[in-house]
Image 1 (cartoon, helix red, strand yellow):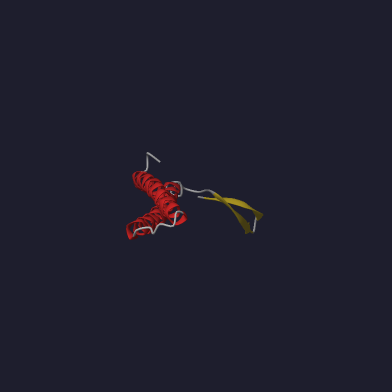
Image 2 (tube, rainbow, N blue to C red):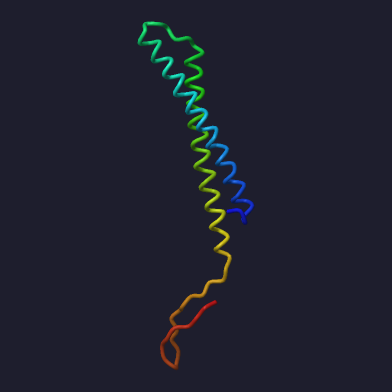
Length: 105
């Protein structure tokens, strides 16, 4: 992918979204465990913990979907570079000399 600038750009953005996904996943997991622990000990969790869990969950979903989308775009952009080559195909041919195959460039 290094020889295709557009594909490389999409791939780098996907890697950045993967890092954001990992950080938000860790924050979401810890905040949900703290809320769960407080509920088990009959304490009332603060609104900030709920906001942290919900906010990090939203960021986690967004960055995960963004990463997958960017990776897909990078792969499609990279593969589109191979479509520009000339293709050779065999086509059926029939005329007064008989039938056969011809090469089409």
